[in-house]
Image 1 (cartoon, rainbow, N blue to C red):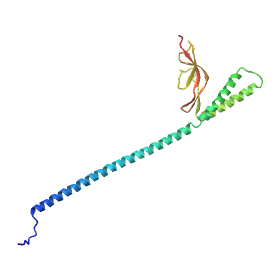
Image 2 (cartoon, rainbow, N blue to C red):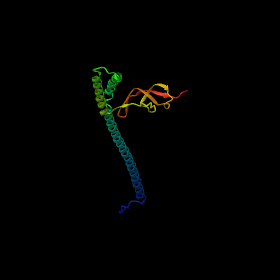
Image 3 (cartoon, rainbow, N blue to C red):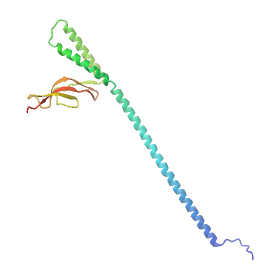
Image 4 (tube, rainbow, N blue to C red):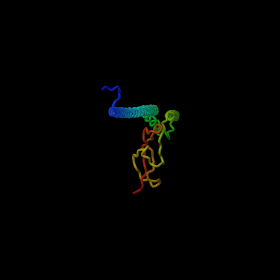
Length: 185
């Protein structure tokens, strides 16, 4: 007997339908895990890019700050070398006080003008003197050379400045050397 009917048995159709469903589920699962992996990789790449950009911006800011500091404090060593010259001119003026010898007056005036000119140039470049005489002792800008009992002033007050200090903008070039009062024991 021959069957002209090309029918496929129902069991075979159901088995093939189940197989297609399983295959499509496997494909969908594989595609989903691949999509998730790609999304995770993309998120990692975005994070790495943001970090690299932040690092570049921070490096640029540091370089700008370093350049600014270099410009701002380029005179520091040169100024430190000039401070003894200022000290010597001030000492010369101090030593000449009370001297009325002929010809000394002109020299004293010359030294005063030279000192004033030098101090003006230093000030023009951001170098200012620190003279804490009569102020409360500040170890940030002064160095105590000695402590002396003095009942006329408050304890811890600068009563004498032996050598002026100097600041380059907000940075201390040289601390002032001072004598500080202390209370009587």
